Length: 356
Image (tube, rainbow, N blue to C red):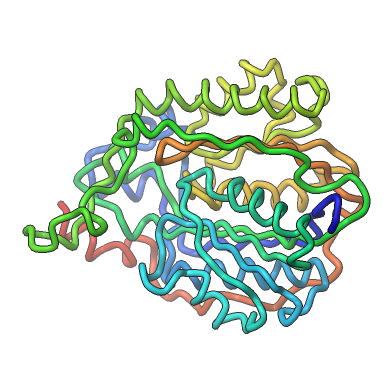
């Protein structure tokens, strides 16, 4: 058994096609100002490939950063709410694509909280001694679900993936403690109805999905839920808000992020924010932001990093990472997505035609 489970590798994959607010405003009744003032989003990415492709590239880049062979990966978790297929799991598709034939694999759907949930599961399985090298991926292709007639949701989301490698460690590092929760009584505040066995297979336009989204209710519960989980984590570890070196929150709405920082009495200079570039990529937001913080040199050896998220369910989660000694990759992967010869509007054109 291992006392700790350290993050030794990290990688991200965002598709190349950029969809700006102005481009969205060219097809639906909205504007750049309307979107920015309500969410903080300026643009987002649209994937031309399946979700598992995004996850696979992010995973291979994380393994290279850790200098870990794919044959050594014995646990593969994909946090996602936009699977390639219901059967089999997206993780099974990723296993095949990267060649992780020795890994136990499964998907974990906790909405936008999925990465923290998955990191807690991987950490526990590593610390139990049953597994040695885990690949944890948060990956989404949410733009595939868009109903373009609903501007309140179509403008908020984007596609992307982030991944980490987790290995046993004797030193204090990795996810030291996390606390997870859910407010199921408010599950209707964020859901995709008729997308499962509780739905009606034979309704008209079954291929068109609606994202049911109560922004006011989500905002109210998100800040309170994340702050509450954060204080549980800090109290458990005997820490205070002042002990946090960096906060990496779920990137759903800039005002929610700012409200969380204010609630915790933490200056925004300590908070990772990239929502303006990617929008809400659900389970991918935290790992993508983590990778970008490392790439920019904003994470130092030994830093205490707070992760906080909320998502469909309504799930909530917080965790405290202690970063290890290394903040640069050991190697770099040449993994890439297949070339994209379409614009973002081209990729979603059929969806726009069917829903407008």
